[in-house]
Image (cartoon, rainbow, N blue to C red; front, top):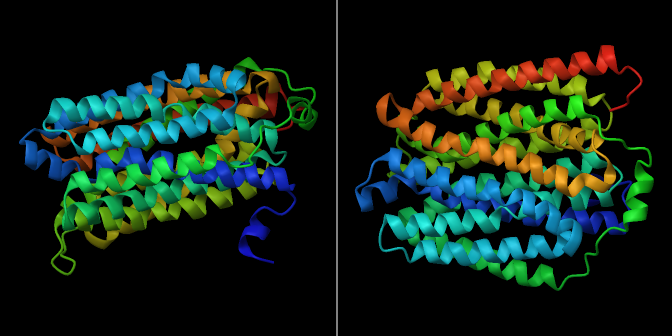
Length: 404
């Protein structure tokens, strides 16, 4: 049995197509938007601007990404998730071409906001396609998350390498071409929308549970904040504080390469988290995974050299291990018919609040050093842990008969 068959064992052919399609789309969605973070230092030098300004641009792009989540969820329910995913990929690719041609920071900011608007169509559509079309939600979301992590991990390496050899503009062009090509191919593919009646049969009595759902909104917002801060500032943190030279490559290349190394641990974390999410009561899994990220982030802030790289890998593993469980729990607590809208709301809060990690991190990096950005992220992990503890209490003591 091949690796792919082992991963998707127990799924039907239709379910495997849905998981495969969304996993590729998820990876590209993050890869295109993360080019900017990977080449941040080079852009700052070329345009002679401060990191705080570039962080504010990242903030604006991320807010645009978040704002589109709610209408994207409604559009996915009405127009179809597959169509919205394809539009998102192709549109973000076109915006990346505009970023590559930007003659100044103003045009670059405009391109990144457009990229955010179109990229923001993805998550509500992709997630609802999975939760309504695949029975083993946590497992499918783990594979989907791993696909996203592959894009997240390799974007800094590829973009940084291209920027070091050619220019940061070539980095945007490379990912733009891939996104547009894949969007065109997948729009014509045979991945179909799940039958709503069949989807409801997975969990026919799924009411909306407001208390745990509200806690999941808080947890999701915290994860969104950490993700934005990590992906924007990890390459810069590594290129600044690793403290060693690699074969004479420029710092942007070194930072991107080692960010890829650390972020690849998220692929294993996502997959393992998805498997455990099908075998362990999810609220019992989420709490310890959230708690362990706090000391890991503080260690990242305080470390240099190889210890920094090791602590970054540990943090990424446990942080992303929690993701499939958290995303699956949102669908556990929401009625099937409202999954598109609920994922639109969670994406809005997660990416909206997360966007402020860009400007907040930029201000901190300028004033006290980029390592202090990760102390800020540890504060977000603390909030997640408190919310996860409250959810644990609700599940164990107020709703003992609710299965998660």
